[in-house]
Image (tube, helix red, strand yellow):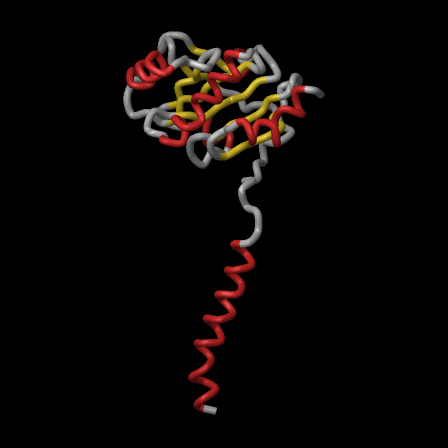
Length: 175
């Protein structure tokens, strides 16, 4: 009996390892969002380009569109930036930026975009992350696809690449 009790922690650990192995094997790349099939949330924020100009959800006029959550401190945002510039250059879709949790008044972000190029129609300046919270954003980069009716259809977490564009987004443009 004593031997059996000594093996109990080992059996528990083995069960835990097996459970974790199966859970890690699942495809959790797609974070669920309660915003799918819902309208873009209401907001009132200044634009990054002009802090004296305030915009709201009705300012997103060119639909369908992408809303790209980005920040200057985000390394993965720099990885996806050339692809966003390519989408803009080819006029494939309108892209709006959501500049997320910058700690200054936006100067660093404005300088950053002027140096590397600006793929956005405009960027909402969200220093406290309020709109990002309303969207359920975990961090940057995240990209939302808004259809021609203003509904959020896709949420992609991580850098947007040509392969991901083809796999997830391009078919929605044909609808």
